[in-house]
Amino acid sequence: MKRNFCWGGSTAIRRDVFERLNLREKWRGTLSDDFTLTNAMNAANLPICFVSQCLTATVEDCNGRELLEFTTRQMKITRIYAPHLWKASLIGSFLFTAVFWSGIVLLFFVSNFHFWLTLTFLLVIFAFGFVKAWLRLKAVKLALNNYEKELNHQLLSHLTLWTISPLLYFYNCLCALFSRKIVWRGIEYNLKSATETEILSTNNRQLESIE
Image (cartoon, one colour):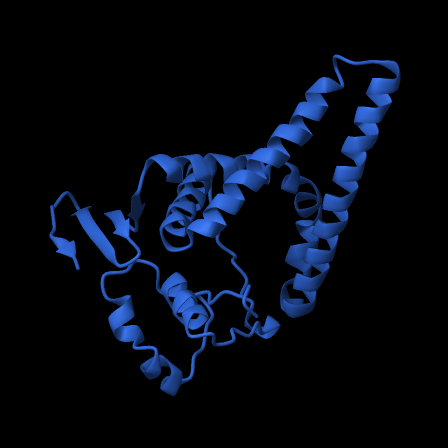
């Protein structure tokens, strides 16, 4: 339960726990309600229970620019509110990208034993990732059985795109390393800390900090 997360899009908390954790005050000046809630629950050593029925489907579409904007924003928020997760993502995405894609490039420059050794190594990595993606999709289909048709249409994407998603995460992590500014629904923020968010502009108007 320590690894569970309070996702703001689908979370419930008992009123007495909410009051005991003084969440109204903890949320003051913050940008991420779910990270703040998660950190407060963990600090109080309280359990966070995952309920599969609370999974919700995202049916909206996005283009490449919107994808980069969303994922980078999420990683910048993660760096401020859960730096240990950001570091793990940075290191993990770098290692996978370096090993897997370097191995693919290496196939064009080696032959005989080294070629087959490299290919076998890559196939083992792909097999593990393939099975993990298939199991994850199968588990999600159990919870979102009303969307089984839509999820079936995404089968190929789930089974293959995990090979390039670490590259996207690595890009997101690097952006988060060099900038704390995000734009969310037309408002530009500067994430000073986990307890202070500065509103830089909205509709070209400069606003004061939220403290």
